[in-house]
Length: 548
Ligand code: FBP
Image (cartoon, rainbow, N blue to C red; front, side):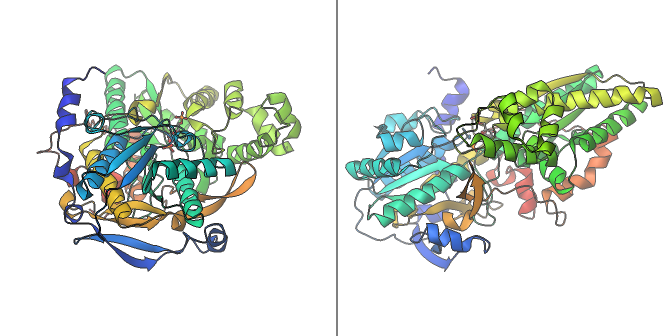
């Protein structure tokens, strides 16, 4: 790869400068109280994970971890969608186990979980590691969305780990991948395999969190700042040309955290939230009317332009479409039902079939696309912005007879992959390095079935607190591919609470933003470590949640 000046500078930046003191001063594990899963599913989780549920939280403290300081062999796998900072998690583990014993070694499994059960790996050397510090993407090892789910895959994974003699395996993944990590930890423990399994919270979507222990998933900050740069730019375009409505769909399956963060960073005229739509049981028609009302009011004010943000997960949370998707998922999990419109219309309930027929052809086709290996609809491929542009256009045309005289000229954008592999921000670089180092300390202390936790993020990074939370304590039972499965509960945007809840904070200003143009232009991400002190540049939503 030909490196740019910026890449070279960032690769050289010393990650150790960010490392919390507790990790530099030994990282001794102190077991805290045991934590169980949410009461609703606690019994089921206990049955599924007899060895790794109800285990204690772990906090790391200054002081030596147990001796002897034998070299460790640790494997690492990147799983699911890219999230900026993954390479720094690897760097943190690498430096952590080498600091423990310089003869420790690290194995990178290639192309996601498939690399684990097929035994496809590289030995990570100093030269390989140094070529990826502070860089974006997952190109160091590649990633994949495979699941380790069959008995054969579990057995093969254990054979591979035993053959290398792995003391630990770190899974860098989102909710589904960390659930996979929990299942693997349980299987290894049940079968007396010495490999311990630790997860790290990755996903730009921001929906893998459990405050206070896992305050945010890594990659969220970089993705949001990248999207905010682009949204800021189209806002200036809207204001300059005064002829377009920029309808921007933002990546983030299910939860609307990204849309909320970007809305706080840029102040668009409107931002939709899947969670609000679901809670208010707003139909597609309700959403359309609301947007048309704003566009008509702005038009009366001489403003036939604006910026509207749409979370990609919105489509899945509109009640009538949610019910439709859920039935389609169930039906498509039956091998005899083909993913064609004709076949699906033949088996849907009357209500869902009506909803399906009402949707435009391109949305019908997109709803039938293959599910991902975890059974999720691929919302990133559904053009919700195009759907809303069409329904709003029709509504505005209907309003002409009652006085609407404006022009609605939409420009459609979908920002997703642009932000997912970006060069990690100073915060993501620091946070990820600390997560990786924490994972190595947890392994040194013999922990398994935990997800690495780095918290106290408003404080300077030297004062961050580190530890681990049992993955099973984050799990609930959900219906996937027609079956009940344990999964990590997705953290959606909280709708209630005081002004420290980011949504409530935004709600206070949003009516004002509808008509007035108060666009905020963040500009490109900065990497100046002197003026971008880590603790001052964490996501806005996180700052509010933590009480700043
Ligand atoms: P993860 O949950 O694996 O982190 O992936 C998140 C995500 O980027 C979503 O925001 C998006 O809907 C999806 O991945 C896109 O998946 P794909 O890479 O398969 O197109």
